[in-house]
Image 1: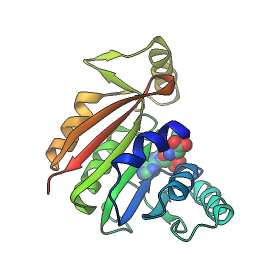
Image 2: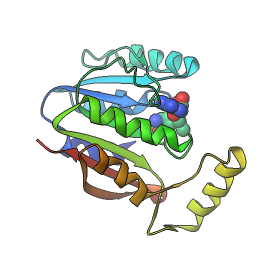
Image 3: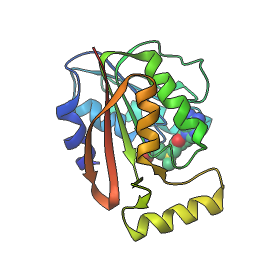
Image 4: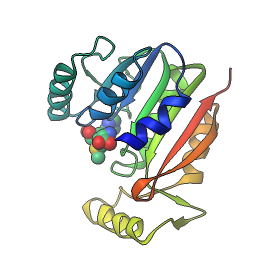
Length: 187
Ligand SMILES: C[S@@+](CC[C@H](N)C(=O)[O-])C[C@H]1O[C@@H](n2cnc3c(N)ncnc32)[C@H](O)[C@@H]1O
């Protein structure tokens, strides 16, 4: 968790709401909210079990700037949050169909204000190649779970951003052959 906090925190806006999509257990929002108390953090997930885990994590953290979780499915247009200064999504687009990545960026295009930033964390292929043998094995494992899942091509993901006015601003190598890709909306 430390490396994500260190990479994300300096690039965050100074105020506003940070919407986390696919919060899972809610730990990223909880730790980041503790480290960035100037921002309000909104965890979300579509899965009822995950929402229960996030609610517990939010209660345990007891931070005034960490909100109770909301149900949000990235694939729908019916997002319960209308505007955000930043968005965070970790470990979702490879473990869901491609339409989920499309929905994530479409939603970012709707809710991010000018200058808003989207942090996308996970494994990526670059120039059509896996960046490590472990990512290639992970991709095979994902495809065995569901042929619609898999490590995504960074360039295809960046193209989704470009379609909604989100330009790639930074790529940061992260532990275990993951990457943080940072997209910003023009002002
Ligand atoms: C591997 S977990 C990652 C959880 C957390 N972000 C983390 O990094 O530990 C993937 C999460 O994606 C969520 N997810 C799957 N499909 C989704 C969708 N269409 N919209 C939003 N979240 C989705 C799942 O419910 C699950 O919580």
